[in-house]
Length: 345
Ligand SMILES: NC(=O)c1ccc[n+]([C@@H]2O[C@H](COP(=O)([O-])OP(=O)(O)OC[C@H]3O[C@@H](n4cnc5c(N)ncnc54)[C@H](OP(=O)(O)O)[C@@H]3O)[C@@H](O)[C@H]2O)c1
Image 1: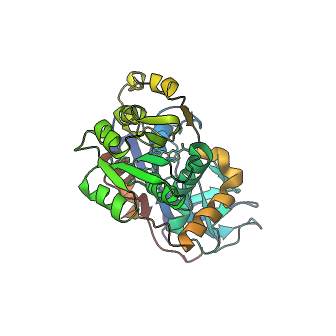
Image 2: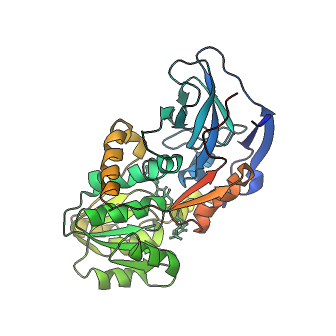
Image 3: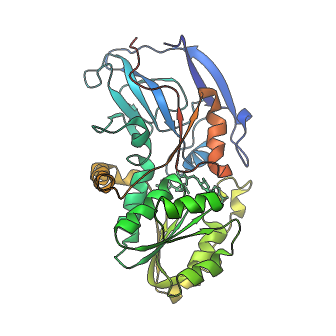
C-alpha cells in the first residue's frame, strides 16, 4: 500500500476554465480509524460537470471550502475498519473527494457510504448505475414523461447522461434526435446508442436541422447544454412539450456568471403551452434502487449499452475534470487508480 495519502485540495476559486494551480497537491499520512470509523482506499473517481459549480459557489450544496479536498463521487474498498457495518474488503461508493484514502464514520458530504449493488462493477456504479444513469432515468421518465411515438430531443447526447437518455427513450418507443459535438460522436450516438438522427452542433445549424428532422415539433427536450442549443430547441416545441432542464454545461465556465446566456425565446413555452422543469438527482435518493433495477432490466434485454472514458493517474485529476468542458470524453468520464481487490492494512 502507499505510505502516504495523496490529496488535491482546493487552493483558489476558479475563474473561467479550471487550471491546475486552482488546486494544491499534498501528501499526508494515511489516516487510521478510531472506534466507529473506517478507511476507504479509492479505486475509481467519477468526474461530473457539477463539480465546477461546487468549486465556485453555494448552490444545492455548499461550495467546497478552500483547503478541503475537491468534492467527488468515488468507489473504493474498505481497507481498515473499526465499524461493524463496513467490514474490511467491502466495495463501497460515496463522496470520498480527490484523495486516495478517506476516513469516515459512514457519512460523506454526498450522502451515506453505500455498498455496491451486487454484480455491479466500480465503473458501472459510477456511470450507468450511478448519478448520471439515474439522472437520465428519473429526469426522462419522471419529468419528461415521454409516450411511445413522441419525439425526444437530447443535447449532450454522447455524454454519460445524454447517451443513457437516448437509449431509454428509444426503449420507450420514441423517435430520438441527439445533439453532440463532432462527426465521430454523432456517428456513435446514431450507430451505437441508436438515435434516429444526431445533429453536430459544431458544424450544423441546430435550429434548422431540428425543424427538418421534426417538422411537427419535439415533445420532450432533455437539456444538458443550455444557451443557444436550448434556444434552438425552444423554437421547435410541439404543443404541450416538456423541457427537462437537467444542466447547462455551456455556461459553467463563464468568467462572469451574472452575464450568463439568458433564454430569449421563452415565450415559445406560452405559445406551445409547454412546461420547463429543472431537477436535482440527489432528491431521488430514496428511489435509486428502483432506477438501478429499471436500467439493469434494459441492459439485460440488450437495450442499453454504455461507454466509459477511463483516465489514469491521481495526478491527472484536474486535467480529467477539464476533459468534460473540452468535449474530450465519450460516455462517462472516470479516472481509475487501481483495480480491486486491494491488500488490507
Ligand atoms: N440535474 C442533475 O441532477 C444532474 C445530474 C447529473 C448531470 N447533470 C448535468 O447533465 C449534463 C451532462 O453531464 P454528464 O455528467 O453526463 O457529462 P457528459 O455529458 O458526459 O460530459 C460533458 C459533455 O458536455 C459537452 N459540452 C461541454 N462543453 C460544452 C459547451 N460549451 N457547449 C456544448 N456542449 C458542451 C461535451 O460534449 P460535446 O463534445 O458533445 O460538446 C462534453 O463531453 C451537465 O449539464 C450536468 O451538469 C445534471
